[in-house]
Length: 326
Image 1: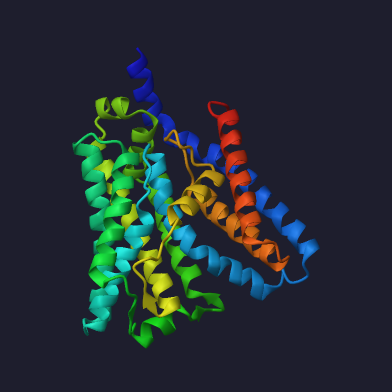
Image 2 (image 1 turned 180 degrees about the vertical axis):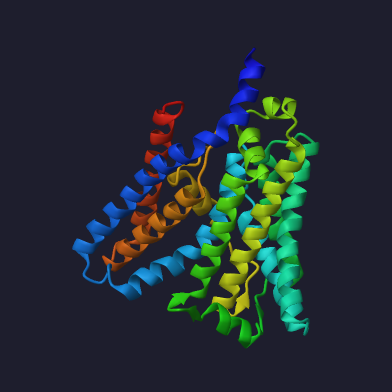
């Protein structure tokens, strides 16, 4: 009887998503508005158009990583290797660019490297039955080591100027990284809320055994979300590489923590089966706004970490208090 109930819940979950997610997203948006009001009063610079665009641009890399992390978390997993995956993808793409490989092919190779790392993580989790935390913790060391070995620990310079010009440009006054993340987020929203894959991910995160009984390809779904996470980590590294003009094998340090924080603030449950694309975007902007506002007020960096930690804990307490309600 329990299995039948779980199966019905997995199949009927889609019809309940819009109302539940909109409610949580509204709460996250309210938190963002509160931050804007507070810092708008404390700093006359905070609400100016250039600073708001700067916040969006600064948040774009974390948002990109966090979107992939959200899909992994919804499926009931975690990905601690996104930072080193980004570094490995960046040095792979940069080395091809410097070698004279056409820019589109070099970018595709970088994305492919990130997705390959995700495939490796997902395959070990789905087929070897290993815990996501352990697999991706191992991946964190493995991919970082590979990027350092490949480069000898040195950054790769010589990024094509046309690529840098594109990444540092704007479209209709909006920074290109922000546009890229917006397009990616729109696609992922459709995938999560309007596609069979989205149903599969939610079902696997809610109850893997019930999903398997219902005919969901559990192993393939898990591999897909980790490949997505790796690919988006690679995309984030391309954005940063274009802004810096170099690929550093040490890039992406602690990106996984910021990504988990953005997803958690946006309503993703670390228990799986729950998360929102819109909420994650808002979570990334909340973190970016908080850091920007504290910087404008000359607050030291370790207090910014303190504030971020408090927000994450509060978000988890809210999730625990509201889980199973509504």
